Image (cartoon, rainbow, N blue to C red; front, side):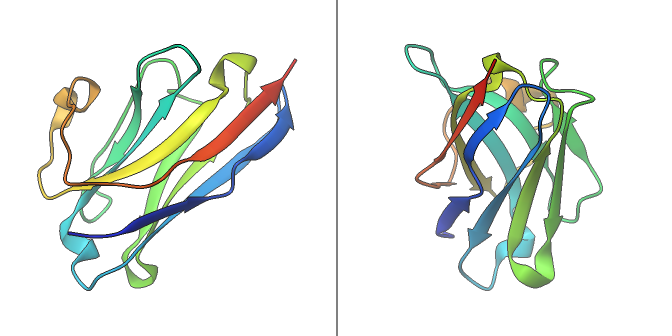
Amino acid sequence: QVQLVESGGGLVQAGGSLRLSCAASGRTFSSYAMGWFRQAPGKEREFVAAINWNGGSTYYADSVKGRFTISRDNAKNAVYLQMNSLKPEDTAVYYCAADRRWFGYAWAVVTSLNSWGQGTQVTVSS
């Protein structure tokens, strides 16, 4: 099991950009698929993006496709979420998660993953 710590959240105006980072502990990071999820106040947690163990496969929620990019650096035990053209509806706590399984299209509905971070707040003002 890996330990995950997110960073990079903050307050940004609509149309702006942020880059979230998720640092993972442990020597087996490269064997994990990684995902980003978010939860807005009063709403259920939702899937944002996922990347497989070597970065060769990615999957995005329709709501962020073309605006967000997930990437990873296994040498640094890190996964990133570059968020461009941010909208007020992107406001949420963003969580990274890790699992040894790659779910493909099922990332959008998966609920139980191996490890979760504590989250980082992203607020987009209009």
